[in-house]
Image (cartoon, rainbow, N blue to C red; front, side):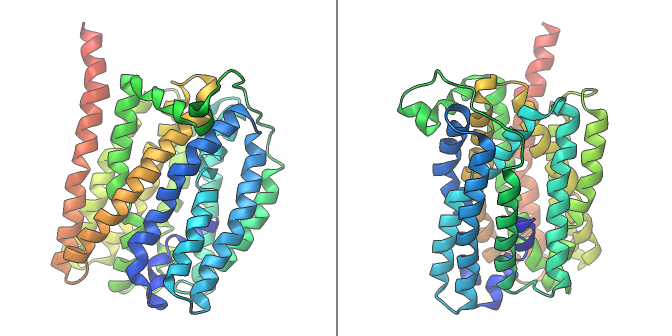
Length: 383
């Protein structure tokens, strides 16, 4: 729920306090600092500490940094203070999503069917966060982040009620294991390597969704961008239910292919919205976020869980988060900002060009994954 409150609202919040110029840096902070903490805490959960206890500690301490970040904007401090406190928040809370994924996958009796359903509750929380912000009229207020920090404190307490998820790797030793660098040996597997790289390439243009779309909504006359950005999460709920029903009937890799194709279609809809000045097309593009996220991120984690040893579950998920959120997030934040400054901010024609470029970029991971995984498997079958 807390990210659903402030992530979609951040561009308009920064604009209110005259700090929009730090948007690419603010967007890249969490991915950058997750580089240092993601694999480390993933390794700790595999080797030393219970994952649910790590979640509670990280959530509790990160809440204070999040509150200070948005308070600094409200107090009129230099925007650099926002970046400083968000850096601390990102460093602390970066591993939380991967750790939560591990808790679910380890403890659920039938992960393929039940994982999408349990993940759906996070989606519901995101929707509630966005709707709460717009209901309170805080779409462009720093109080959004302060409220999100208080809710994260409550969430941290509930983490202690999660199922016990103790470490199960007592053999790995050395500094590489301590830092979680042994996760990179997973890239020796060809199919895993193709999956990781394709997912990272796809995540780069996807950074534009939360960075740029809220500003486009506002420019096209939307009064409640935070609430309208939750349309995708609303659709996501039904997609999660669909996944839980059809789990096991189709190969996971085909869901990934569909997710990449829908990612291309989303950017195409945004481009056409720019050409036609149609807010409705933006809403349709936002709605596609639901199946895109479910078919790439959720099924992607299931794809990994089926292919890695049980002793590396935490590190495998942390590496996925590192590549798709950290490395791709940093590149995506600055590349999308560079494109926006040149083509996005201005006329309808500029918006169209901006989104068409991103749509074309999605072809790279789509073709790479199809040839690397689908095509290779078809060739092996024929042989």
